[in-house]
Length: 128
Image (cartoon, rainbow, N blue to C red; front, side):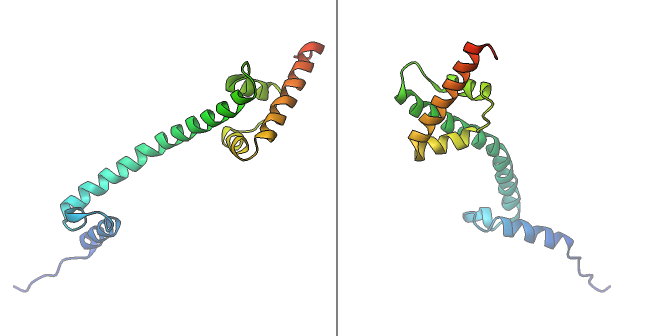
């Protein structure tokens, strides 16, 4: 009986896994079984950490905005700023506000002062 050469599908699958694991250290990039295990683990961790990265960045932006706003006045803080922004219908997200806070504090102060005037005016006139 002649020898039958196997197909290429399994080899192609393993090659793809090896290419993914090229940067892994030691046996994690050499042995097929450990490559498979570490690849699954890496993909799982990447999927899990995408959500935590979003949470961490949001926390960072909030902290930056709050720090700059509190420098301006003791009674004014992040939650009041966001509340007034929503009341004034000025839709700036936290990422943009944090960048403004870092790069140009005076601009953030100006935005908050304008919002306070506008919301205070609407409240005194009775629009809100």
